Image 1 (cartoon, rainbow, N blue to C red):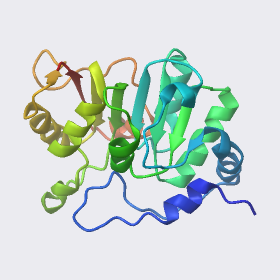
Image 2: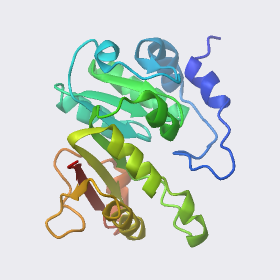
Image 3: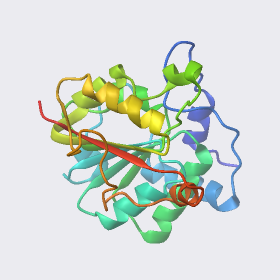
Length: 239
């Protein structure tokens, strides 16, 4: 049976002690449709991790603003936004292979042309593959909150990561995060406020109302049914 290069690559990723990674290894269970989509569409839409900068014009065969989503899960928000905004190019990063398969399956069923996917740790991808001043937006929706105090240091959004994102955003580019953990929202707010070059887009100096551009996912609806609040934070690169 043919095995996607995404499967082979993700199997070799081993987080090193002390380094913050954008993911947690989870056991993979594929549906037949997810596996088929991954095997058939990865050669066309998948990008192998390399330690060289991407040329977005060549990658998408056109010039358009690029939106990067880190950890897109099963791909519902990424696919919805790409479908509704054909004027943008969308790059998704995810290591959960069934999620990539599910995303590719939706891409095929909707005939979407403006999505590309990387199956690798997002921090390393952003560090080595994303050009400086090249992204219109970076979005992270419902990252692992690492809610136990002793695990807070494992949260993706830390000062070094936020500075890295800032360097990759174009002037007036946007960093958008959504979470259903208020403690994480407060943590992100503290991190972002400590970095020169970002401007909070909230009039209150805290969170914003969910923008209509961010689709409501099944995960979010389930949380709302359980009484969970959602916090959206949006920051613009101003220098």
